[in-house]
Image 1: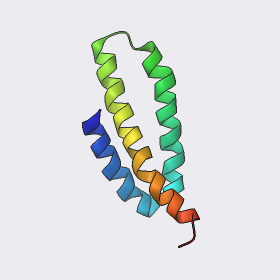
Image 2: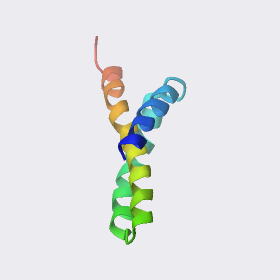
Image 3: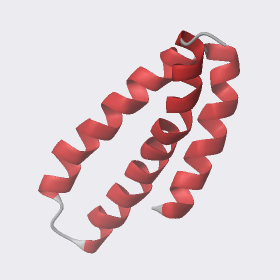
Length: 77
């Protein structure tokens, strides 16, 4: 989960410069919550747990790295 989170902090942060901060923040936040509700509850074996950890790590890493730029975008300098 931590390794996927490291990748999830770098790639979406770089992509947000071109696509837009909020354009990435909203779907990544939604996917993080959806993964918690759908995959975590239905995880029954080790493979599914590892799959959940990788996906959740990637999307939560993007969520963590995009919060600060989104707040800075709507705030005055």
